[in-house]
Image 1 (cartoon, rainbow, N blue to C red):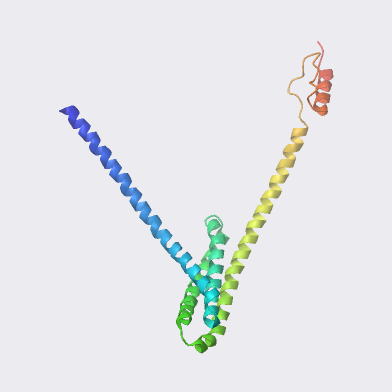
Image 2: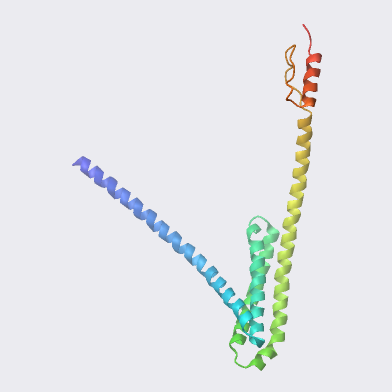
Length: 212
């Protein structure tokens, strides 16, 4: 009976562990889906906006084009800034500014959505100049942050490459000044397949070796 109870206890513990692992996997999957859902929805919206900008003529097509330009500029800048924001304070500050631009872009996007649904083309045409000016300011600001971050990354890469090149040259110089740690035995002849400078150093070391 004791053995049976021990076996049943092991089975219960095993099943409990399996249930716990499955529950944890389900929770992680739900979290991943919640994070991915907005990105997928935004990607679908971007495709739809791009299609409307190409297929709809007149002022409504121009409105869709403006929406696409703003969203593209902000997304491109976010992709450049986010990867290095955790380690570079300057990029973190730039990302905060981009978040403020996002708020203005959301307000503008709401206005543009209204214009896309507006049936009166003359009214849409009358609003185009104002929304175009706001969109250009947002796009330029977001692009400026992106370009500056790219220049910063390139400068750091160039500096790192320059330092690495100096280290490689120093190591190459050290390799060229190699000498044997112990002199070869008397009568030693360097193999012919060794480079000529190495054979010369070996012969010189043999000649310089002290004789008993």
